[in-house]
Length: 367
Image 1 (cartoon, one colour):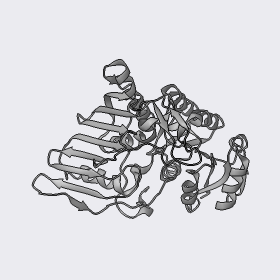
Image 2 (cartoon, one colour):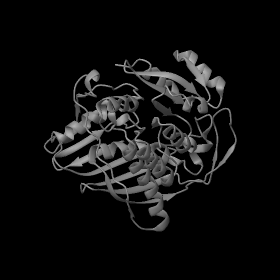
Image 3 (cartoon, rainbow, N blue to C red):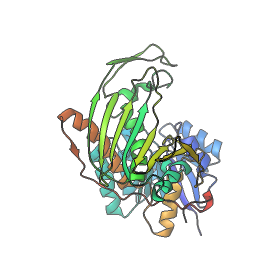
Image 4 (cartoon, rainbow, N blue to C red):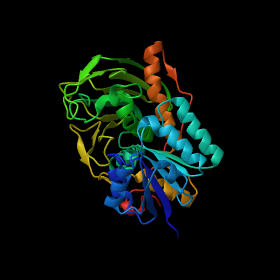
């Protein structure tokens, strides 16, 4: 069986882990790297043994490429996705799917028109940690899930990131930066969202960069940096989520917890693929560490691309699909809209809860 051929557009920092993981897969071949900075594309191609380095336009015009992996900056996500779909290619994009709901809708519409698949990060929910959590829920370890809490609370990026301005511009902020990991994990465990509400604010209108090479520069903050949200799932469960860049003293809160009629599930960091996974049943005095039931627990970014390749061969829907990514995108905007307008935001989109993976070794998870 011939390998599917993929090309990467955007050879920035995140591309390294994608290339590292994808070049080892026997069913997918990365045949080209593209970047507006051609020298950067050539460097990636040389480092990972990719046969072709080119411009994005040249990659999109290459008839040999089946899947475009879009690792550009968020502002370019929609443009590159639409160009790839127009060229008749399947596309997988880093999170978020797009910056605006209108862009996200356009991507899904173009994919339907062209009969092509759309996939989007995050794919961390396919890792052993969250898949173990899904299995524990389905096996009844905590009974019926009735509520959830999620916390992504930190100090912000200006103290470590070399180019942190984007995180405080429109389209940035903690919800759009890290919210996709948390919301995707929650939907994978509890199903789609019915409505959301929230409060959002800018705690510090200016930030001073303390990292190199821009030490001392001032950032004008244009987007909320602390968002507190409430989620009503279609299942009836109620969730709470806080995403914040305003905790200068750190936090001791958990990442995600799921509360059920018979116990509590402590979910690992959804920005990772592994554990720990812990459960406390109603009759226990403390949490117990649970063995992971699934493989892929290292930094396995690119799993969503591999599942897309498997879906194309099997004639099924890929798990980290465009509908899921758009549902999460709409919810993120919904928290901001609810705060602005002072009322619940009713979701217009829905999605299927991604099919759980089979338990067992990594080699069989896409069977």
